[in-house]
Image (cartoon, rainbow, N blue to C red; front, side):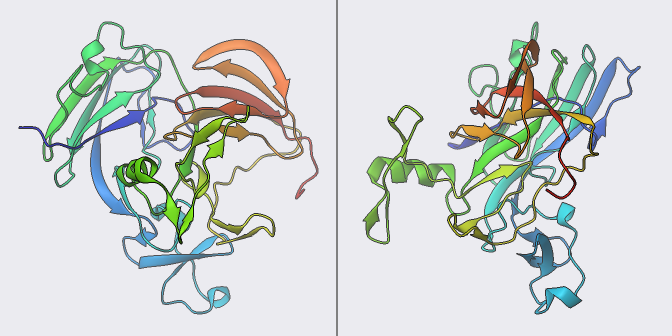
Amino acid sequence: MWPSRYHIFIFIVHLSSAASYKCDRTARVCETSLTVQHYLTMTHPVNSTVYPSRGKLYDYRVTDPSASPTVPVDDVITADGWEAKRLVIVVNRTLPGPDIVVYEGQTLIVHVTNSLASDSVTIHWHGLHQTGTPYMDGVPFVTQCPIAAGQTFTYEFQAYPSEQILQIQEWNHNWDSDYGFEMMVYGLVENRTQSIPSESVDGTIFSLLKAHSGLINGRGRYYFNYETGSHNEGPLTVYKVKQGSVYRFRAIGVGAFNPFRVSVDGHMITVIESDGFPIQPVTVDSFIINPGERYDFTLVANQTRGN
């Protein structure tokens, strides 16, 4: 009998400069493995609990960050830097999950092990058409039975079309999806005050789902006050650029519900691709991305350093 709860994980097979797995370009078959497990935010394997300060992380026993060594940010799932730990379900203990770098047309074999205590899972390979292999699409109870706790399932399919991405999502450091749904159904009241639903750009009611912050590649900050700009100084994702160079960013909305407006301060951007396919280039100051959508855009680093 399958567990009553199951989770669908959505993966994008793409190219990245910091890959967890990269297949040789000449190989016909690429093989790797993924482990789905529970983990805690703001937790280091050695230093245990950490806290943010000035965009860096420190051991919870440190009282003077200016005179103390930092904890490596890459070893910690920070999310928005909220110090109260949040239980998360991750793949290979990373958020976002590890890169799988293959070339279009190669056959990809992925062994997925479910190391959760009781929940079952599937992996949905978003953006891949699964031509000839619909049973590898990862839709629970439709294309496959979910992977039960303690079991391993092997996916095998051809990589098409190609994708490269930057991951954008909303984040709530208190709620999980089930709790958020029940709060919407029975009324969202906090501190004896009923919350007002958010609105879409056309003024209609959008949702009661509450997002504390936005994350780019798993990192963001919690703002205590948007008007004053005060926040918890959590570490952010940083991209190093050279003045005068042109850069291509590949964005995907990996959130559960909310759209995001994507822009770069002081720059115009040119959208050149949608959902893995080229489009007529359009130069804009921003674009809106919804969950599951993918856009490629270019940016010219034409501003002065340190602006």
